[in-house]
Amino acid sequence: MKDNDAMLNVADVGYRVGETTILESVSFTLSPGEFRLITGPSGCGKSTLLKIIASLLSPTSGTLFFEGKDIATISPEAYRQQVSYSVQTPTLFGDTVYDNLIFPWQIRSKTPDPERLSADLERFGLSGDTLTKSVSELSGGEKQRVSLIRNLQFLPRVLLLDEITSALDEVNKRNVNDIIHRYAKEQNIAVLWVTHDASEIEHADDVITLRPHRSTQEAHRG
Image (cartoon, rainbow, N blue to C red):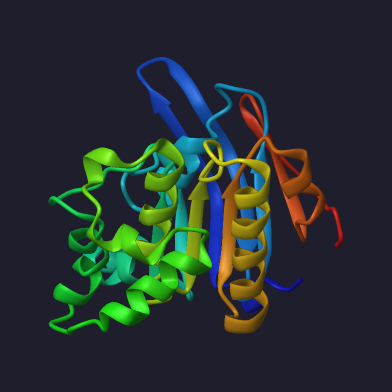
């Protein structure tokens, strides 16, 4: 794969806290429609790397390029509408699921169709009635899916996922995996997914294995 085909280019990125090195010289590219997984032992910096790519942390060395531009030159608001980040333990706000799902519409001064929101919930294995459910009543797995659906209301160019199926049963885990794969193939979204799940690793285009102080790429062709 040529670097000039890449949507995202992570170039020699490192991250230190005091004297502790968390990431060192991590480099890879991510192209439209590509589905790559990041794996590795606990403490090797997987979540830190995603936060850096999401522009929530600044690397202490190296540079990130999005569509050929240093992300430091792109406004955070514009960048985060193109590069969406879903976390393992999501933060939901407001009173109901509806409050969360309309947020991406509100910041774009648009009004969603409630029927479409209910259909989105059902596609991810949640009842349409979940739309009016209090966020305080949701299980961990329901919160993970609501957060993901919120991030997919307006499809990003790059989707960053950090252990977002960890609280799901196997049926819902497979469903989420299949949906994300379809988005990558049919909508040409680039996906970068942190996981420990062997079944998810098996279906990846490539796997990036992080080890303490270095990054290696191990290609697993689907």
